[in-house]
Image (cartoon, rainbow, N blue to C red; front, side):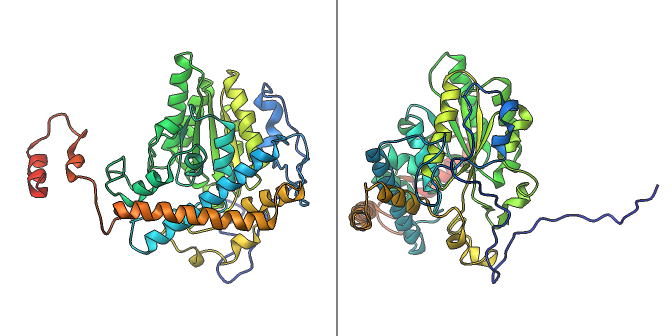
Length: 410
């Protein structure tokens, strides 16, 4: 039999390219408060709609509405807002440091700060987070010394990892932050395995895996979800759909055909889709999933719909593949600005207070940066002893390692 039409291959493309007007018409945004909040014991089949809808709490008038409103105290929200401001200032300073040759590599999380903070406040530091590149806000919120984070970025003598990891690949298990893996999507199988071990021992700790929209196309993501479903692992699988994986739009990873949250339905997991620039909605979703995990009901998949406001990394130039004003046109706004406006509407914050705090936080971060740079940067100062490169690699080094040590004089 012959086809009645000539076959053709569909190749997804971004909704807008450089020089074109930003286009987010593909994003369907329901009214805040319109999405139902089921009981945590609800079966995945009974809540399929939540994998396709969009949970929102903050409305266009900056009010918290609907069944997902976590009703957090104003003092808690002020703390969250201040931490997000510090997070953004820290990232800006480290990005500038890379441009000045003080470190080799950096990735900013501009516009994604609310996602990290939602997890920092909804799960505990005893729970283990297996992160990707844009979740350092977890560490800042949990009290990790910022200077230690800077030392790691600079790979100086104060780096507790002795310079053997790339910048941003933090390892702070004491703050519930597992050593970061640069091979993306491995976080899912690692987190699921950790959560399975916690349950096998009869423990009380859960795990969180962070992955981006592009990395959901990796095999580790799907294998991890299957194991999480089969063994009811107490884990949250958090997908940051920031619309871009390096230079490829989310459609290349399958976002044009369906939502990323819906991938959980295929293995029998409950799935939520959330406004990732709404801290209140993000917090409520993570809290819901954490309660489900702690109730021995298993894993949850959450898609956080957000936007990467900056380059993928310092090796990337987004103006080559998307409109330069894309972030300004993103319909879900900026997470810091939205929380600030919400607190202001409550009478718990003001523009003057915000400006004063930004200036204070910038000065504090700048002072910590000076301290870190006094220890050393990539280009100058004190660096880790090269001898550590040969430690904890092989039990019995062979002749090549001995020769390399001789060449380095260690």
